[in-house]
Image (tube, rainbow, N blue to C red):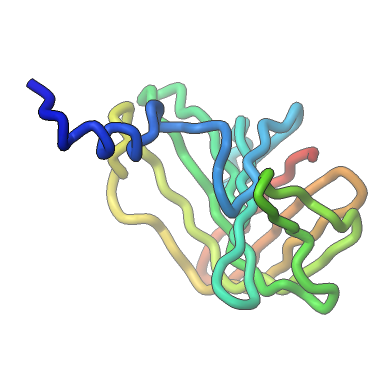
Length: 157
């Protein structure tokens, strides 16, 4: 039974777990998107770009895990770069303003989620070297470290 005082709470909760409009970030469903992790090439379905603190960006590549019915995501955290942030947001949403951008990579994170949306273990988050860049209509990130396998991802805007 829903009481009248609960009605505003129901309006504040999104109706779906994956809303198409996201405040403060760009959410895009690219036509072409690939993740390369642990020597494997995996398809990805979504790209999220969001501000991460005062001078950084988080670029998240998300795909459907056919084995478990869940999802997986590879995230890269980078500095804004010398050109500033390529992400521009206003009341109507976010967009990529710059078609030429490059930044130093700070960390990567790899995590899988089950069909219910719960993480399958702790994310494999590492400080790493590498870079993320935008070249025309392509967003790419590549990391490398001595003790961690190379991870990269690429998507079209």
